[in-house]
Length: 165
Image 1 (cartoon, rainbow, N blue to C red):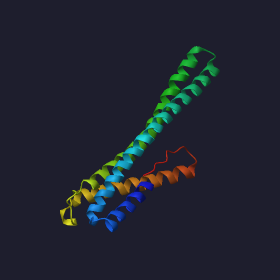
Image 2: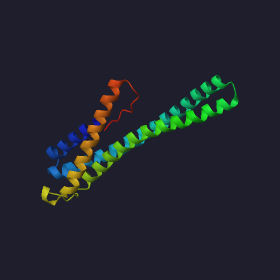
Image 3: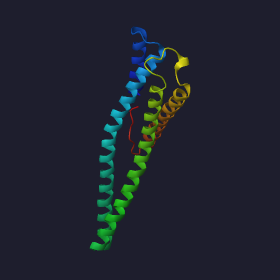
Image 4: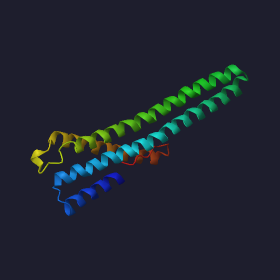
């Protein structure tokens, strides 16, 4: 949400204190938001990878220890390690799918908004309204999903990856 607030403030500054029209200010602010989302996506992606490795490792170790404890053999340890790694990788993959789907919608939405006009855009008639509307809808859906997922995960007490759109 911070990125959207900064982008809205930049749009107001470009319009009020610059010589930009509202469409020009919108394009400039959406260019900032596009770069903001890329930076946050790379930063969060790093932590998603670390979290996935941690989940897979912890589940493999826990399952291996349980398999060794139950069977008292190296075969039980090996089966426990394999099943734990598969289970941890599956959980990590589900978390990754949730994260990547929202990030793709955010990036495509802001890209479509920022490319709906050019620097020479003076008024709304010279903008590609299909791109603008579709980009705004994608961005709105992604922000709503982030808010809904964060709200449901915080109320259930489960692990969540907080996104910062």
